[in-house]
Length: 443
Image (cartoon, rainbow, N blue to C red; front, side, top):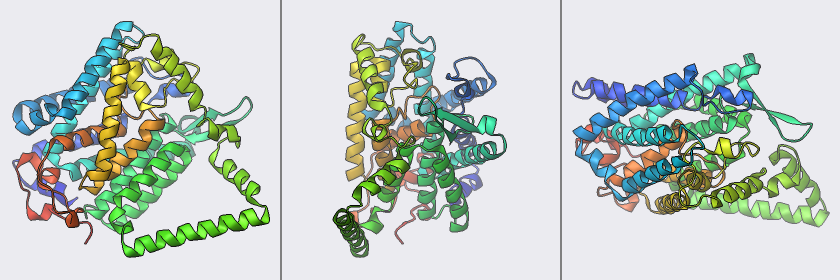
């Protein structure tokens, strides 16, 4: 919280910092909410939550417009290669709206670009750490409310998912789809650990909230979110792992696992272990659920068949609920989601962003960016994740990664890769920030 306090103490940054911090937190809180999913559909009517989301989008549009006309660095990001490709993606989805499948497609495309410009401006005003703190604040309130509703008002907080003709499983929804809630919870776990490493929040705040977030993520039962979040946390602490003690521990774990497998096979108990693992991983306990990735193979086949009927233009964003009513109302894949929204070319643009994420996981000097890129990589494969009706934490983090690509400056030597550079933390594009912002999380 030190960086945010410094922004508030400076009279030249106080109002912009408070404004953007509040908006980021509110968007992180409200974006996952969707009461319609408890009635078997997504919200596309003008209920109270949608009105609040539209009002937030309008205010964020004003903030992004101010940033565009005020800061050359914001315009530079929008004009960068990544910024232009994202703009092209949005244009393609708007052209896809000509299908008439979803009348809200064009507004959704514009809202996504509005939040992209807003996030670029917010990071320029706040710095990435304070931006992350704002996201954490919003998602923390989501987690607290979701937990309360799950235990005390289960008719609202519990999402009963049918996994077979006669069996359902109860998942934490928090008045939104469990997958959306779980994505937000996984992202906030990464953020909390990042903020702790950079000494923005103390351990006695970090631990209880981390326990809450992890417990809620478990209740939400989204294996994709949990797996992607775990991989991202490992990447966040990769400097601690890739050391002699870390490698020794990994080698010990690997050898122990190898020895355990040998014992199981030698005693003939391997099949029992496989059955137990399947029972733990698969919601229904059926092995076919693992092989088909919880039915996603069938969903992908249907989505590809629908895209093939209109490959050049697609159908516009938010068309999946209309086109896949019997397949979870979602493509469960970021590339297919883009292709359904804007045609095959839009899908290829998403593949380009995927390749860029792969490169950043390997090449970025900032462990936080590596961690979030790793999360997005895994999440893109099995969930829509981005290009939401109202951009949630997943989209906001993706926009942040794109924004930071455009803020290209010299980086520290590889031995100081844990350190964060000027544009990464500097508020309001002031160049080199005070030395207090140059905290090394490896110390």
